[in-house]
Image (cartoon, rainbow, N blue to C red; front, side):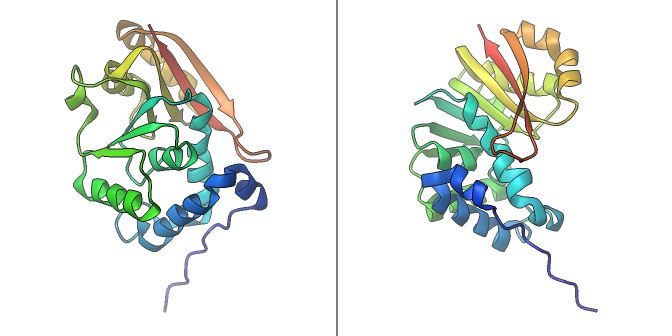
Length: 213
């Protein structure tokens, strides 16, 4: 018996309006994921029916916490969440995508070239490899690690008075509580857990913001 084709989520009109001038490149990125994402081991077939709501719009929420013209490192960019989404939405940002896996780094390079993004640098490294070598205004991460482990890998990359912006799940507050001593030791001093609905009616995204001294 032939398998039924997986339904792909169609973006709503509010989604199109939300992305505005960045709609065309965002749609191009989404289409690349539909055509190649499962084949290249980036996303599972169950993710296609919620590609926009669960992944792209969810990633877009991080944009609200990124200052204008800032340098941003996205840890473990994987399929491009949130790094590619943010680079498309915010051409003012200098985006650095840190991805240790070769096949994922290759995918990110393909996206950057095909979509035509000139504000992105891709480095095939683990975040820890850049400690004491590079620093950024903001570090972002989505579904990379629990908060204490994420703090250890990311906060050393954040400049003074910069911030970590982490897209988390329902246990974000518990993770923050467990990680509070690690965060403090690494220079984090003001931690907030935000629930953000980037688009009216959309499922809110949980964002943990850690300010650094």
